[in-house]
Amino acid sequence: MSLIELSPWDLALASSLVGLLALMSWRLHLGVERRVLIAAARSTVQLVLLGYVLKILFELESLPWISALALFMLTVAGWEVMARQKRRYRGPWGMGIGTLSMFLSSFSVTLLALLVIIRVEPWYQPQYLIPLLGMMLGNTMTGVAVALDNLTRHAWEGRGRIEARLLLGEGWDSAIADIRREALRSGLIPIVNAMATAGVVSLPGMMTGQILAGSPPMEAAKYQLMIMFLVSAGTGLGSVAAVWIGSRRLFDERQRLRLDRLK
Amino acid sequence: MAGLRLEGIRPKVLEPVDLALAPGELVFVSGPSGSGKSLLLRAIADLDPHAGEARIDDMPRSTMPSPEWRRRVGLLPAESHWWEDGVGDHFRAQIGVEPDQDPTAGRTGLSDLLARLGFGAEVLGWSVARLSTGERQRLALARLLTNEPDVLLLDEATANLDPPNRDRVESIVQDYRRERKAAVLWVSHDPEQRRRLDGQRLIIRNGHLEPEP
Image (cartoon, rainbow over all chains, first blue to last red):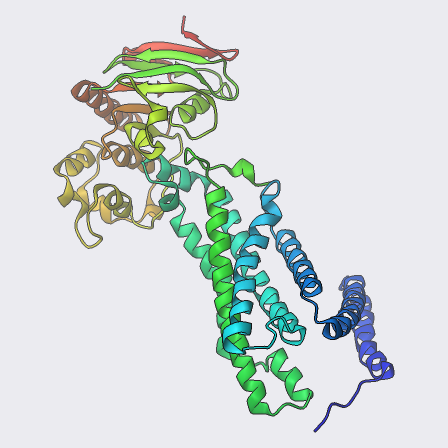
């Protein structure tokens, strides 16, 4: 078994389906044709670029360049988390909370996987590091964004309830405990659901890719399992960090609820 | 027994407020809506950032953790908020009774207090959703008083109540004030009430707190 290479013509054929979708959206007045086309164009440019960048990185195997790409991915993920917030934190916290918590979770879990589980030599070998980190960031990003959005929205709506508890002498962490718990749960639900249905309803993307590339299905399944465990741990860790830092930021040193720190 | 002293407390729309309430003293504050009455009470309870210092019996607020300070200056907001489903759950948390225990077991005073407010002890088993605005307001007072604050800050404490319930709340506050020598700062729109209860009367005009003519 070996990989059948795709020609530009094959891709053009596949992309014509997206064109058909845009046409349908236009005929049915769904109003999403522009967004469909722009998103398709974006993903084309981004993936082709990534292909080139990875090709160069694989040849270089240089730690500084790999770190630079990793940081770039982290920054984009941090920006994306901020963009998904209805109520953002003002100032550097807006991007900082999400970025820091994804850094803590994704980077540490990826390192653990490279050093302890897969034992890659050298540990920064880009063929392993970049796809793993990408998987981690992509999934923690969703979890962190949902959890943070949930936290700030409910704190905004629940101002009266939080302040009622503060007024009765509760500390800040107990006054926001139920909102914090709910935010955390909402951040974890997508990945828990994904784990529960993996292989039955959906064939996960990574496993599909490996099988298409000619790996034995059992190897692909094992890799997929490892990724899924890592991703859940990373998402959990990231959401906990984001919700903890985020909720702390909602109160000041006198334990006042500071919704003016959101916009 | 506790007096309250404000030194240059400055909420957003007010000039700095200096005010001293002796233990057991009652002071009314009135003024047009938006003049900063509620903001003044929120500032005293340290809910909003502001300049100034407050003291209970010469104990400065800045030397006290804010949860302790807030427990001592009981603020009753104009609108009461509830975060659990059951009425009793809000009382259990404060008096440290286990969830399956009857909250009235923890403190004998609670059932008396509820009775004086016109409730039987069964109200603790009710769900918050079925309470009327007036019932919520009275229960919020009960919830506040079980905390045994040294000072009371009341924001329109009787605004949604019919005359019999208004009288009940007034007499409970008066007794609390006399028995514990607690200073009471009461924001009230009701001129009758301000005359009836015989306290010092202040009014906010153009950002200044001054005696009501």
